[in-house]
Length: 304
Image (cartoon, rainbow, N blue to C red; front, side, top):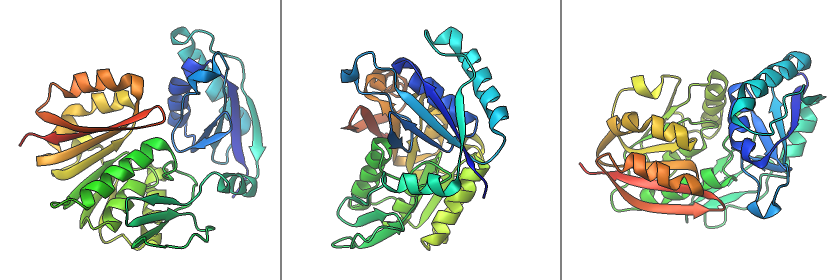
């Protein structure tokens, strides 16, 4: 594999959310903010005041100069909406694949979820201990390694429901990324899981991860958009952005079985009111809100 591409931007703090999404739309498969490795993007600490965080976005091998121009055009499109956004040609460099892989290893420690699940990278020697289930997952071409708060919050919900008196029999993971949530659900006993991911490369990565963990019999990976996906589920997981959660609300509802659960993550704490307002109009009951760092995960249950 050739050199990866790195784009580096210094941004106003308020721009990180929108620019992070735009970079992912351009094909970025890894983003760090102020040197913190994330499986989604993260706003800076409010205590940092007016600090302008440095965002580094990584892209698969390709032409660096073409990518720099694409990012510049994207920033120009966003500039009217974001005061102080830089619109010049961004800094970029080639990054040998081995440097990319090694550099990420330090950011992904083993993660214990609930009482039964351990998720660890392939280079980890972490003993299983009391964990009945061990998943191996390395950071790579798709987001979702579990270390970031939004993913970890969803994993905790999966673990709680898996240990409940009536664990979900059918689970839908919307925007599956690396497939970590789908794999956790299957590993904890869900017999039928659908991982919905419209990005073909992420879909391929998820399928590889699922096969590597021997879970392909339980999990179906599909690029079919949520709107066109058939069936109803006992648990729908959506670790995506708040705006997308709101936009997809009627489609989530259409895919919920009577009494089914809907877990919404990727929501900044300050965005909770607009999300709860949107979902409060639906026949759903808000069961719990779990919070970690500045992120929230909302768990709803269908009235039916």
